[in-house]
Length: 275
Ligand code: DGL
Image (cartoon, rainbow, N blue to C red; front, side, top):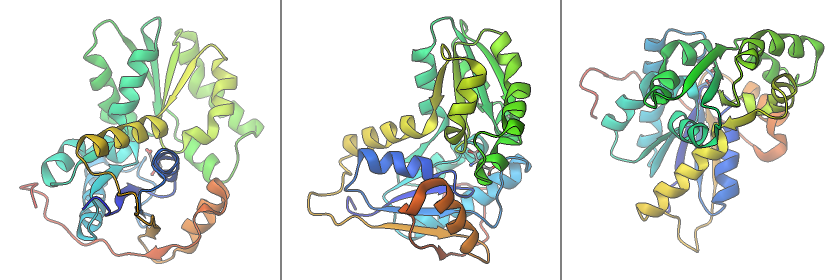
């Protein structure tokens, strides 16, 4: 089991930021990544639909024998975190908890901002987790156009900076000292976000924090790949064409992803949760 791959999933290419952070910390681990390109983007979709799509993909990863599931998508994490922990025997790591913990230990003035897709912000998942500490003030903003900018390879245009100013100005004026980038795509926009928020605001992104969580869980459960393991990185996409995934992956990550194969996710039965 320890030499089995870590299963990573996102609606599309954004979760590659998490995959890269995991590889940086755990280069001997094999990865099996699925981008649910048949249903992306998740951000604007009803949360019940996102939950179903996400469980279908996680089932597909488990059927391929992964030793751990990483929900490398904020919108999916917000939609179905508890379901996933009940449904699978393998450990499940998601992106919201790690970012929340880091934000809590980073803030000095107790004012934390969170940005994400409409689905993530609308779900209240970040607000609920941060809200357990009554001394914190949490301000949120959905930034629906950010994903499109990243996927178009635009990280510095006047239009992007204008959108960032519009979304982020209320958080800046409210005096947040820590901003959670609650979407897999936003690490690519750190320059623009930091420019608008100012250098004194700490940016917390879920990719490195989630990789830390994966590391902790593998060590504590004795699931680290053995010293002779030959790591393989396999990338799969749902839908009809792998080309779009490959094109975006190259644009965002360089040549790290060399091939993508298509995979079908099946219809699932959700009501009782456990499989
Ligand atoms: N991966 C999604 C997230 O982190 C962003 C892209 C999408 O909307 O599907 O929320």
